[in-house]
Length: 278
Image 1 (tube, rainbow, N blue to C red):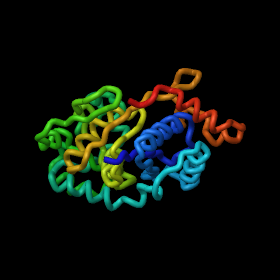
Image 2 (cartoon, rainbow, N blue to C red):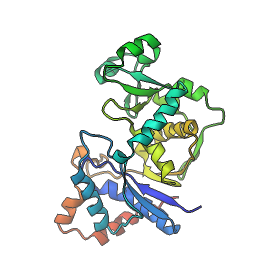
Image 3 (cartoon, rainbow, N blue to C red):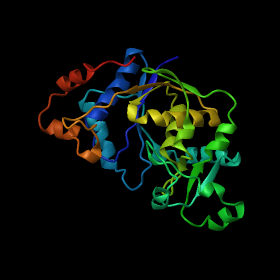
Image 4 (cartoon, rainbow, N blue to C red):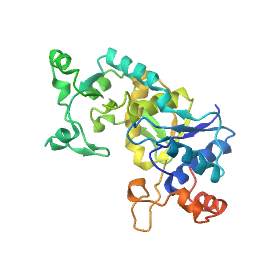
């Protein structure tokens, strides 16, 4: 099987060293195996995604010497595919509309915190069909009924990570995750699962901050009858202050480094000097 990896940033800002670290590993994994390296723009956030940032991402990758194969896939062009996947889950009774606000969820004393914030307490799961129908004109997202979804899966849910080996998926810890947002007909979890399958991705390279999300993606793959890639979760880069590099914390962008005269060949060599993927 031909190795197919991908780099899938959200065009909500310019790339920083952490992005370069991940993109380089996905690129090198595919190239070492004589495979394909894909670029995907995860631009489903209508409030933050910008065409200028998408163009900047391509510019930054080319500056690093990382070319990709085929056209760039943009999630904003694939909304009907996500809607179809959601419809399949709804038809099986595995998804329900949720009318709760973030403030209401955060205020729930019964909501423990997970990697993505408070775990949804299941308020709208308990609404009657009549109550849901009456409120459908209100803003709402769609959530996965986690208990019903797990009950519908017969085979064991497992996935393989290059660093930790075989992992027994535990998606229940994430609660009833969002499948379609109030402002978009999909979510990260649903879109990335559908797109990895559609693009034939065999190896997913991403940071350890998304390790827990893989549990959810493995469940969605089982529910939708999609293949499961091999996963390579790599360590995150941290700044001098010890915090991981992130846009929201003002990590220096590659564009700023380029303007400062940083040599991309030296930079790439330094990034490659980190421990390789297993």
